[in-house]
Length: 287
Image (cartoon, rainbow, N blue to C red; front, side, top):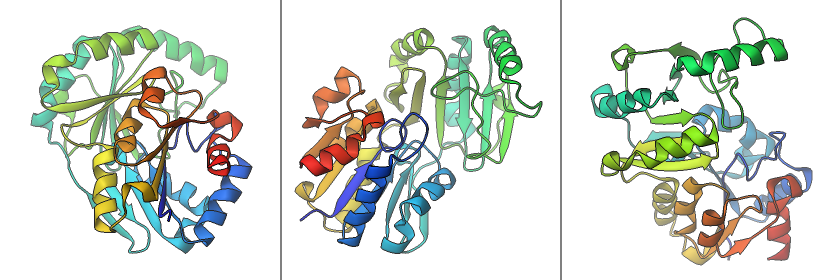
């Protein structure tokens, strides 16, 4: 019997317009009515997952968030929010300084705050885009997983810009690099010296997400499954990025989205249509 449907957000549940496709939404609500719970597994924070849960009516049926790639989780039924691991500035200092030296955009993410380092080589690109897009003066300078400008204010109440790691205070949940595809590949290739301290995931062609070693979406999914006596064959997991492969390892029914990279597809039991083609709906109906 199916107990959980686990879904990544960007590139999986959400299409390229950042929306849940209509047939997928209707079907997921029907599954919940039949007793199946949903688990939203994302690099997004707890706060950014709330509107999606409301749209899917999850507050009526329960379920979970796996947030920030497994650093924390939220039990909707119990209204319980747990952070499993955080990092102080000393822990991330060498990593962040190395990333800055590689001349890439670095973002240090906390519960309500993001610290962003933006290298000089990106300023002119962002200035040009700001003029072309006619954005307000207070629009953030931060990049997103798809472009050089992305409004982080829905996820983080505070956005600060830094050049020195010592300007960061408080506990951080993850570090991420947002940049062009060529820079992402360069940075990723130079992270081996940190492989015993951190986990590195290329979650899109423009993004690397960095977590403390041993933490992942899959680890937290296993924790939730063990807690609720859910077996591997009672869970379906959908994803499109490297950080979703750890989900696939915990279940028998793993499904990669059609637009996922070959590495991700090879780790899944089945490949469905893309996120712009109702891929989740197609896989659930076919199954």
